[in-house]
Length: 440
Ligand SMILES: C[S@@+](CC[C@H](N)C(=O)[O-])C[C@H]1O[C@@H](n2cnc3c(N)ncnc32)[C@H](O)[C@@H]1O
Image (cartoon, rainbow, N blue to C red; front, top):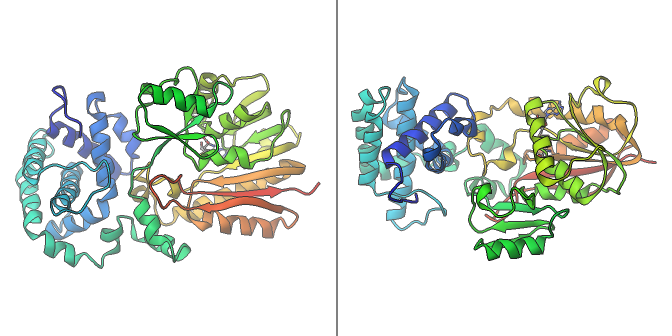
């Protein structure tokens, strides 16, 4: 963690992280929970809680052995889980096992001391400060035996829920370990040049001149050596670039488009792909989303990037019910970036795996089928529909499209990447693309 004379005390950082972890244990998303952290503590709370999410399976299994009855106060449990995840990384590092870049490392003594201080600072955890101290010290003493006993517990080894591990192993028998390992690495920060304002090479030159390590990646993107807050990167307000993962950047090039086409972006918010389509072509485009608040962000993004136009219309509606909003004019191209489990973006949202339930997958796949079936009749003869999800589960990708082709034998499958599985730290997120053409 970067320390400066003005850094908040480590115990305050730990307590802020534990509060965010507590919220996730209660079912809230980590990004929402972190928004409640005081601004000065947020970067540290994020780094610490992301680390805990990536080690939660192991920490929880250890906690279950050392404190078999779950502490009734969730904040106590959160502090224990955070402490165990940090202690494990620090002790492994001390043994010479390299930890992934960015792992927060402290000496065991500092950690235990600061976690007890953190517990003392909140009335909900104060009565448990001796328990927290005892659990962490015992883990330090008995760690080798405890870890050996957990070597056959998949959740502890792979830090994902059992159903998730089984789903990945069944779908990708040769790659499941690489996929699960990659899910615990910090992802690269990728930018997409807004070619209406600046080309990618000029953007790279300007960022390099400002001291940023930016290098080309993908067709339109740059990867930053070190992630930074967006406002600390030159050109944000000028709309030179957007933050967008490299896999997501493929969508706009996969959909065959020409200037003047009538296009539907059916699940558009917050507008990353909408903007990319409009940067590359002048279109008559409808950006649809069922979430009014998220749709507002599409408008903000188009404004920042200089892409607003009378030919671009934002519409809050349900893509699965075109009877409510479609004017009867066919679209020459449709992007269906459907809602999904987000299993492909766990590197960026390490809490997702703990928030999803096994039956979410069947529910999400059913809703995706409803959306794509409803959109298909809106496509003009000769038009293309690009189906996209940020999921690595075939239920939301390959199997979904195979079932669609059974229901719509007239649809033609065109070349597209299919499943993208992240393996290396510089890879894009897990994604799935299928391109379908309606015969003329
Ligand atoms: C994967 S996100 C889209 C990301 C977006 N295409 C981008 O690149 O920034 C899926 C979106 O679908 C929206 N959504 C979910 N169900 C929907 C429905 N039935 N109709 C329209 N939009 C829906 C969600 O609100 C969410 O914004």
